[in-house]
Amino acid sequence: MSLLYLITLAAQTSPPGGDFGFEDVPYLILALILGGGIIFLSTTRWDRMGREARQRRRPPAPEASPTPVAQRRSDPPPQDDLAAAPAPNPLQMSSMQRRHMIIIGAPGDGKTQTQITFMVRDIARGDQVIWASTNLALYHSRDQRTDLRPITHLFEHTRDALEIMAVLLWASAEVDRRMSFYHEDMPHGDPVVIYVDELGGLYRRFGDLLVNAMRNIGEQGRKVDVFLGLVAHNALKESTGLDMALKPLFQTRLLGNVDQATWTAMVGPGIKLRGVPDGRGLWNMPDRRNQIHEVQVARPTAWEITDLARRMPLPDWEPILEQAAPYLERLRATLAVSTKKVTETLAAAAGELAGAPSEPEAPEPTEVPWAPSALHLQVRELVQAATPEIHRLVREEGLSLAKAQELTQTSNRALARRLGLGSGGGAASMKIGEAIKEWEENGGVRLFDIPDAPPASRPRAVPERGEREERGERVNAA
Image (cartoon, rainbow, N blue to C red):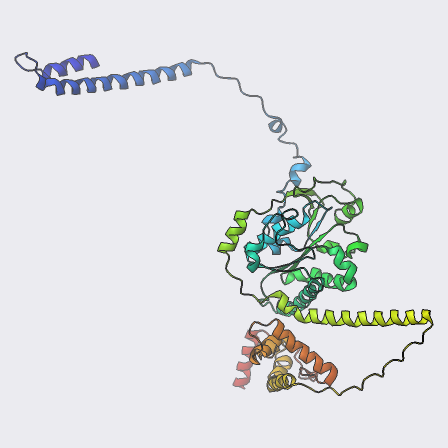
């Protein structure tokens, strides 16, 4: 039919006289194209219809045998499926989700490199980070291989043992300071993460002073966003000071090649000891149900460090090392006194053994009566001006002393700001606190002495705002 249509079309385009000239070529080409297209479409349609007919004539394929799961649909799922959960990845957690962390492994497991990886992730999230390690190296081609020098402006670091201990003492005091804001449900500050390496060496030098600071931070720091990241070779109390009450405070625990005692102390006796290849960044991490998960830690690349240095803004928080300076001075003074006593004792013992008479002790200097400084007098003037309002807020409104100080601008930070010692707090507010404490101990003056309210006028409970307004309306009406 298509061929007949093509012949008819060609006949209609032919000249009446039967002569065919060059002017008739375009019409002939158009007729051939239209005819070829019609033939192609018709052939394609008939082929498709033939395939469909052959498929309908085929016998149906046998049904596949049901899977074992389909055969046992009524059976309960296995216990492993019920306990299946995504493996925890502490690298993807923020410091508030990860909380306190401890990394324990043998030399060569990559403890320092793993700590650096977590530290870089926290810096990228905007946390205030300080790296405290007696073996600190911002770059070491053999042991570290991660160049942290491009981002030294984004975190703090120290390798002095006394300064590390001062930082931990500051962190313990910072936890206590933030707890007053936590109790009032007020903002308490940015997250602070303190990474401490070589825990065993610090414990051998500072002993219970280090343990008490870690205990206070570990117990209450998670509520006010002050976190610890420790690195040690084992978890024995004799080596690190980590007792049975301190170990559970570390929610994130990464274990490498450790001994049986450390494995049992950090995981429990019900799971067999497992080791990992040295230096590959592979760690065993027990979860809350004491199931062991393998965590692979890959060190940050040079491109990631460069990109972090380029895109992160300069931090605006007050440096931790400056705030820990008063504790460092106190440690140095204490150490100097202890060293002097030890030297005098050894000298006296050596003289007795040699038979030489010991030198008479020098008379103790006459004590000079303590007198308040100009700073003490300025603080007392500001506090005395606000004392009536503080008494009213505490006795009548039922507020805490810390809240009353905050409202009357007589807290340590507010006093430091008003006296021009510093606007950011930290070392300036600590100086005010030391001055008040010194006056209370040496001068017998209590600036914030709030007498007890009489039993009849003491409020039984702090009324709600609506109740106070209603009570005030009733009084006005009366």
